[in-house]
Structure formats: C-alpha cells, structure tokens
Length: 270
Image (cartoon, rainbow, N blue to C red; front, side, top):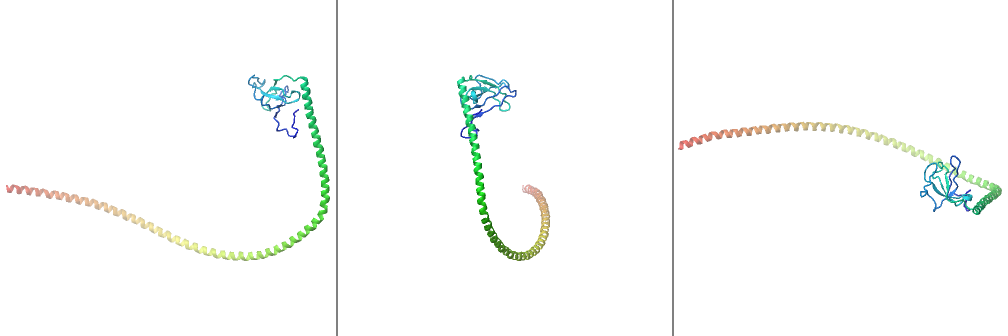
C-alpha cells in the first residue's frame, strides 16, 4: 500500500523505494520513502546483512501501520536483495496504528473515488463525442452536394487550363525539336573541327618529338666533343710541363760551361 499524490495519477516523482522479497520467501522489505535524516549504509552499529555479510541500508517505512518506522535492510539492488530486515524503531502504539490504518483507508477511498470520477467523466465524454459526430455527419451531408457541385466546376476549370497547357506544351515540343536538331548539326560541325584540330596537334606533337630526339642526340655528341677537348687539354698541359722541365734542364746545362769559362778566364788573368 503506497500513498499517491492527489494531483496526479503518476507517482514517479515520489521518492519511494520498493525491494522485492528474498528468494526464500521468509522476509519482505516494506515500502519505504527517502528521508534525508536517515539514509545511506549503517556503519555505526555495523549491522551486516545475514546472507551477503555487508552493511545494511537505512530506510524509513511507508506502508500501513509501519509508516514512519526506521529499519535496516539488505542494501543489494533489486534482483539480488535477500529480504533481510531489522527494525530500529519499536512497533507503534495501537492508537497510532489505528490512526495510520484510518489514514491509509482514507487514501484508498480517495483513490477509488477519483478512479470512479475519471471513469464517469470518460463515459460522459464518449457519449458527447458520439452525439457531436452524428451532428457533424448530418451537417456534412448537407455540405456534400454543394461541395460536389463546386468540385465539378473546379474540375471543368482545371480541364480547360489543362487543355491550354497541352497546346502550349505541343508548341514548346515542336520548338524544342527544332532547337535540338540545330544543336545536333552544330555539335557535329564542332566534332569535325575538334577531330581536325586533334590530328594537327598529333602531327605537331610527332614533329616536336623528333626535334626533341635530334636535340638529345646533338647534346650527346656535344658532351663527347667536350670530353675529347678536355682530354686534349690535359695532354697539352702535360706536354707543356715536359717542355718547361726540358727548358729548365737546358738552362742548367748551359750555366755549367759558362761557369767553367769564367774560371778559365780568371786563371788566365792571374
């Protein structure tokens, strides 16, 4: 049994938690609500869950005569919860329990009354909707004939416009055929000119290729001639060095007789 918000049938905004019963069916965790003063895991008393051996969770009951009582429960999520429950607060006095039962009964009665009111309102709306649909159907029949006449007039006007468009389309088609034929002739002439230009280009390209090959051959021959000239230059330098060496030797050989002559002259003068 859970208290619902009077203003809406959707209780998703309320901070309720619901734990399923344990797999053995011995315990059932009561419905609870979130209490800022009593929440989280119980670490002070170290009350462990009997099955998992983990600290239990602090909760405040929100169900029948247990409403408002604090208790400790298995902290495992739904599907793994073993149903362990240990009450922190003692059971309320009988007067308190009777008051809580009365309050919950009033809530259930209010809920039931509201459901009945919603059902009656739905039936009334359905009946009114049927009557409105019937009136609309009668009104639609009266308008149907006038609508058909107006639609026929629109179709006649549309057919006349369509005939005018057809004639215009025929004229445009004839004109377009003439334009297409002229374009084809022009395109054929352009293709012929392009073919001729392409042939000329290929001929010039062949001539350019031959000229390029000729230049390549001449460049190769020039390289060979340069290489020969370089060899001749090296040989000439070697010959020049040999000549210079020979001249130097001849000058040295010529100086020796001159020195002998000077010696002889010196002797004769003495």
